[in-house]
Length: 535
Image (tube, rainbow, N blue to C red; front, side, top):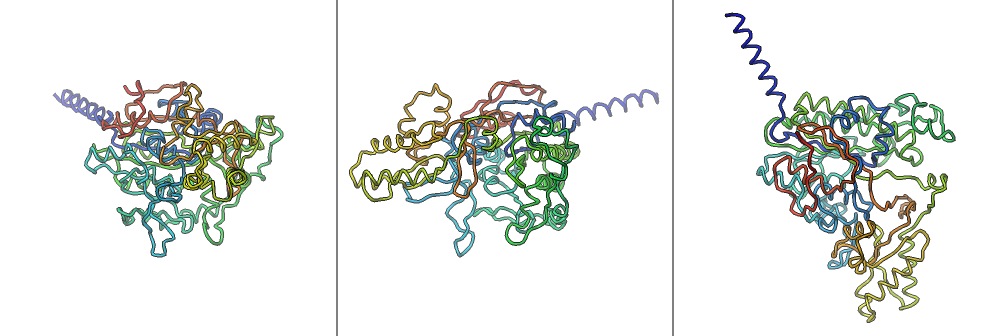
């Protein structure tokens, strides 16, 4: 009799354990790990340096899509974030650039900031997603659950957080580089106080601790990619050693935030959020979006395979491993969908192209706009013929053109022809011509997908492969023909391990997640759910 009771007890225990470890019907928690300037090439090149518990855990135990792609056009990562969150292209969601010229209002507007001022001296506006024209996955989730799902985004800057949180997030936390503390990004219709757990976290002053450290190689420097394959670029360990001390004046904590300790701080806060915020504890799905970076910015500009960049990745691998362990302990990875991807392609310095004989150069959009204005003045007389230049787009002065009774189509073609003759320009084309151009060429199709009739300029400029653009602050940015070969990894919950090499548009991510959550697709969604991901 005792043996029967004991056997029954053991059987019940096994059944209870199996039930507790079975995946929930829908993910209880969705965690987006969004990494700035990360490519599939880097994950593959550095994977032997990673532990088994971070990136390798994701790519070996999850569905690893190696060739995610955003359409060419804007270099503003908010455009890519909006595409990721809505499943729509810029021609639908409307975030064509960081800035654009609003013809109806006769002024330039910022994508991430509205018209309501935070302070009385009107020096700062409220961040807002109001200029995003479609709903996001989290918007639809909140609608479906009548606002009971919680949506939080944690990162380094407001521009990222606005798009990551959707139209009605619960909390957007950013690191203030002046105080070294996390603060809530204010929204005009959603002013909230810091939770008690977050105030206690800030009191730890972790950035003060991290800023007293130095940043050097995490592993044996001889095993890093640059050291093994670029003998002319070999360096000594003492050459890779950066001080992270707090600096005087504004943005005092920038040195430490631009090191691997910035990622560590995001991980620290995210784990506190999961533990203290009780996220993923019931059947109502919660969402947390985290901003990390693979970009090494200390010293000179570092390429995607330089030792500093690899060290950023190796250390980020350790942070992701800790984060996954915390999620598993607090929520259960079988109840959590982890989506890891990149929001921008790594920048290749112009010097690297030159060194390897790849055609390259630097283009200045602002100088081009000035030269175009001089050209038009020489032909049509004095005036401000060019109203603005943003993100490889020229905005012409329609009122002045109309006043002078000049054919708008003709002057657009003249301007495009003038720009096309400049060094580094593959072609310049009026958007009116682009709309009717063949989509057989992927570059033209991508530019079409980035066009919005009320927000885009009159002329789009496409640079030659390998060329960069110099901004007015001296910074150089790459204008890739397409942001391709970006990783997309689904892990946890009911996800089956698989390796996929075919190209996957980033517009497919939002409807895939919506399908898992059993909610409507975002209302402008143009992508399709990826199939064969779950068991």
